[in-house]
Length: 520
Image (tube, rainbow, N blue to C red; front, side, top):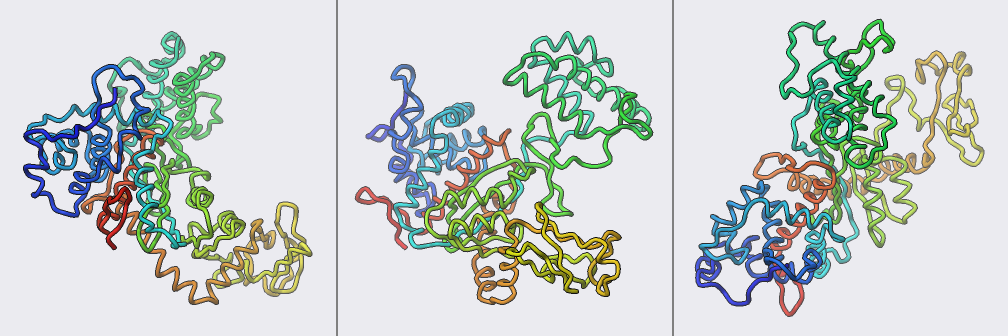
């Protein structure tokens, strides 16, 4: 059953005895005075539908603890210790000085209850309600978007470890798999917890092991292919098929039919980095910066730093790209907005979505690269959408195909401007985006309107500070503590809720006469 806070104070109530030691204006002092207004019991009643059993920790107390845990980036054990030993935490949560606190598993229990409820992000929703009531965003029509890579909570596994782990997972989760493993898998004893015993300094021995493991994986997938599976069992078999294919390629001189394999000489674009957390991905923040983990996307009001939307996705995949998630943020907003973003957001699709919704794009255009250094870019070609043609700098006109490609081909051979245009033997080819008009206009506006560039330089960098607050604490880059996109997305929403609340507290947030107000 749901527990509730008592109206009367205990003899050793921490707030009454040492509350004066907690700095005014801090998160601890704010929660001490307003946690029950922020997280009323009625908002959490559905988590405990039964009126029987031992009362839970009061919702206002546990919600406050989850906010403090996420804000200070503590593990469950560290959080339980802080609630037991730290006077500030006792004051913030209304505990007595001699309260022994709770077991760390209680936090897991509450997060699971929230995750499986109809409103899994109600802590974030509560803070959003406060933001709305204060009116801090009223009349502010700017939104800045950005993203960052957050390190996952698992160690990146090599190919051999992934193959063995995936086969063991199938053994555990797929009915009847043990018999098939004993029957078709001969490359390794998968019941052993240690790594295969080979000469790891011998390339031939390593290649032989990779071949044996890949063949075992393929044989096991084939043996179970006709088995009716669902849930964890289906996922385990699919994961095995994935890891067997993402890192392996036929050995030199082999077509893959003779059972000879080697570790691929390239990294798969959507590589799973660990069978412990299959949602974690290998990605690149830049060509030089390779990272493993998840991508955290954020939209914020740049003048106040208030986060208006957030989402954790896997770190790879077109549907998880910066512009794709920004379109989701765009759809969630009411009213006209000016959207600020760096060149990663300068796609035709996102610009089209912004334009169709009647918003304004203050987004740095993607730089154009000419096939020949210092030569003609796509903007030197004239596009006539009505006529369906493209004209090159030498006044040669070609039609736009159904797939929006203009091919100059053999006409480039005798062109006097060829050296400035292309090095291709087959001539220049222009590929046009469906919203090419918006992309061209954006590049012209960026060059011709200094006020646009000034607005970008004024407001867009502010979101980087928000990103820094989300992704680091005390100068230390945060590392995610949970497995899977769902749990890490819930963490991000609690994180932004805590940061938004801290932002408002700094502006004098208080609750008077039944309403949330700001002093400034």
